[in-house]
Image 1 (cartoon, rainbow over the protein chains, first blue to last red):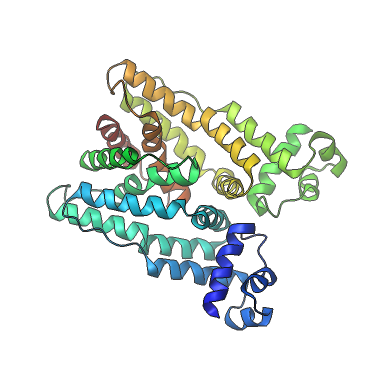
Image 2 (cartoon, rainbow over the protein chains, first blue to last red; image 1 turned 180 degrees about the vertical axis):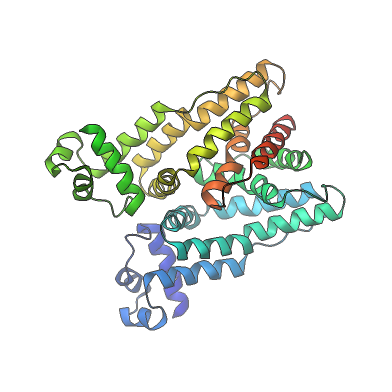
Length: 182
Length: 182
């Protein structure tokens, strides 16, 4: 039943957003009583925090292709698909917006990012430094921004159409160029 | 009075977000009656659309320093300050979240982006192509993502502390490197 409620939270978040979401709506969608929800989570906030943490643990696969460009390309293929999922493309901006005024959600999102996208990007940079493809003293924070920013901008901020296949190849070359210029 | 109401909308958006914002709250904050608001705008949606369009027209100054790196550096200084403004850092994610489920807000935001941030970035790329610093057939969409994505990721998504001065310099060099690798 916990899984049915979790799935209902995602659907409800995507449909109406955090601010308008209610425990009643979640229970209705999950086909359970309100009490069943409250028995597991104290409030809407705790439910969403739990969901965000679960996402982080699940994480993204860490690429290990043996080259910086190969790893970046794989990361972009996985991320591009994930960000285009209708639930992700509605829920992520919504949680971002809540994070701007709710420190608990902000902290849970930071943690999910560090363990998810940022964790994978850090692994890619560390492996490339070990292979001598990038400088030992590279600025890791800036490297993560260069890796994650452009595809997020295109998929979530601009909300452009699905980028053509060549886009991810060119993005990979450009990002490798940026990291090597650091 | 129109200006007082516009200012109140910004403050109310930052404080409670679009979903929870009401015409009553805006009128109270602006010190006017509800009728004064409804006389100018039909609904909360129209008020916000009007504000977003006004932002776009105001725009960002177009840098013209004579070099790609100089132009990027100036753009990053202005954008970094703008994104760190408390109102921007709360209102932008909120409108992004609404855009995911409201096509009218999505369209107004796209237009504001094209006329604001993206318009300036396009100007920088076009000038660099004219000077021979970048290839004639550069992919403009990808170039905009490379220019705008990383600082947005750092400031709005990660919500990190104010980046040190050297950060903007390194970001400028890295982005110029990425654009030249295209």
